[in-house]
Length: 127
Image 1 (cartoon, rainbow, N blue to C red):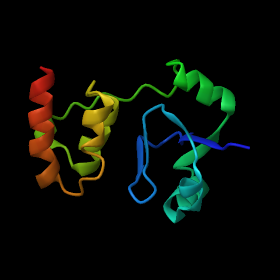
Image 2 (image 1 turned 60 degrees about the vertical axis):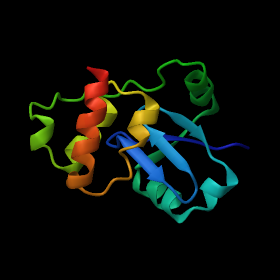
Image 3 (image 1 turned 120 degrees about the vertical axis):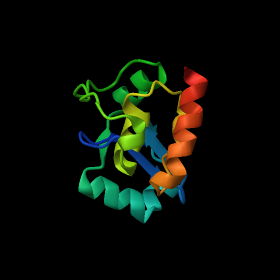
Image 4 (image 1 turned 60 degrees about the horizontal axis):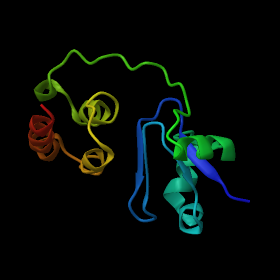
């Protein structure tokens, strides 16, 4: 029986480069064997960062329907220059309006010094 996951209520992104699982926003993913074997995925499920989803939620997601009505994020009043790493990553995922490919570029960056120039460059392309 296939298993499906989505982000937990307080999560905005999940990335496991080893198994190749990347969940952004309201996405629902079917777990493959390599995902189920991943320690990072198991820990994320146990900790509530990832939660199990239903097959119906997965089908609705693949049809392009909104799956989960998440709480409206509080708009960040800071400029991107004033944000820390977590705030920048959350802004990209929740508020930037970027497409999925551009969002994927920022989720694995570990420092503000690396992330800020990329965010500024991509953000200019959207303006």
